[in-house]
Length: 220
Image (cartoon, rainbow, N blue to C red):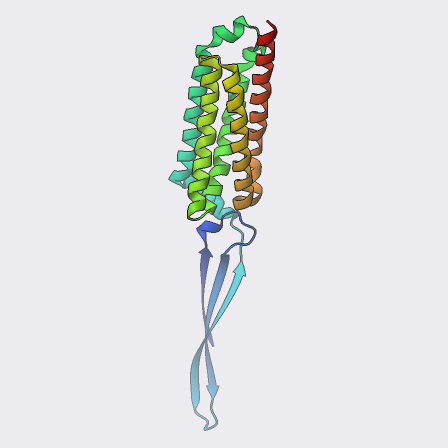
């Protein structure tokens, strides 16, 4: 009896991060069996056995770091964040004069934190995008774009136009879409949704900062 073993790995790309996934390792074993029939003749038969075992998608998610789409998500978030920094820096005299942003001396630390927050959020959005199919992909992409563009708009309205009321309304709109994005990522990618939570916390900070400036500006 001789064996011929082979292994095939099957992964459904649309199910990244889902609790129930079409992911498996199939082991195909071919056996050559020799038997004797009732007439005493030797009969050779080839028997094929297939064993399918479920496997995790961790390796596949790791391989997603090589995906061009992932880097488009990440680079888009970084570009928007850099533009936000430039907008804030161009208005440095304004908020130093009002003495509303005394934490600006730590802007490097804040910048590093925000870069991490934006990158992690972009990764979460990408995994949700990759795990969705059809209209789900479009919805995830649209919500993600609204989130990063609304973030940039908040910086422009607050720092360039100094419209505190408009900035506050934008921050509330941004919070709404960030909550939607968080729910979508949790639904499509499971625990990957925690990647968006730091950005959600940043949104709450933006609302608080805008409200604080608005109140202090009205008192001055």
